[in-house]
View 1 (cartoon, rainbow, N blue to C red):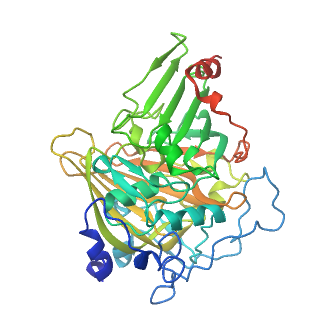
View 2: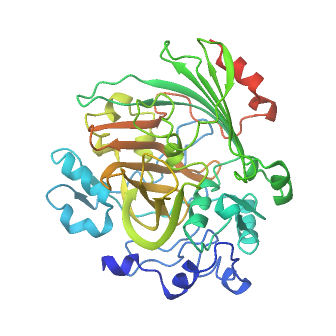
Length: 454
């Protein structure tokens, strides 16, 4: 069954060996919205019905929800179907990743997975779906996959031909248009003590703006703006980062600047990419780990391995709740397993192997990507000795006021140090503003200097 689940179907196998820049035919694209969802997922339920058919996801907010609130759990009445722990993990190994299994081995007495009924909750604005349909027959990779063209707003490759197209789908999945938040991150010690770091983040997704054209995107060569400012603790407050992400990184690599409060200067930061340590991460993630994967794919060979059914964090509204404190979430070794919801979903499996001519502290990464949203759900990470090094899990909810499926928390486990980094803690802070007024002038080096001043 494991081998079967990882093999492509006859059609997918044909696509997997297609040239990198091949387009999907009109006949193939005609499957979208029928046997395939517009995002390219299988519409039908799986064989035993444990993964239901896709019926459009969450289309309205639960009763009692008002904009600005933490998102209420639309599945709060669901009961745990069963629990996977060290005693029975072998029974479910075909639906888990090697990295997930390693967590059971590392924390046999405390790590567990409470499995709930599956809800395919992903939903998107109609203009995003319309653009995805159009992209299916127009989008192309350029510069060996280091950029794209003839795509806009929606997923560029809903029927991916290879691993590069799949990872671009994750990079360009819809996450709203402009968003402002304050989030926390923490890296607990083995004993569980931690320092909470709070960051303000602004993101403007130019690629996703309604009415955007592929011609404008290619002319400006900009996908999104991102600004991050550390607000606490005091010793770090004011440190700031600005990123202009480009559409064709061969034509122009990512543009980045940092502001250092000690020097009171804005400096260009060309090294804010790849395996540079992530901002105030205690060395527990790389820059390209942010958002589970980001940036240029140029250093890896990408292989689309197929699809499998897998238990992944999903609809984690309890972990998102403002009724839960950071102390309750951040327990020794791993986040509190009682707060995490797992469901069975189909995922794309994409393997990235470091090119012989390239350098990175990660030799191989295996991404497990949710079929309904192109959100990376789990990543297994290997070092240069081919040993499992880190495992990351994304805890996903539908922000139904947008609507979009995105993470509420990302957790990176370093297996050798027995530590983890939790990014995106939002329970004790104001909820994200997906309607923030963020003009382009907010994303200049001069604006970064103003934002970084204490």
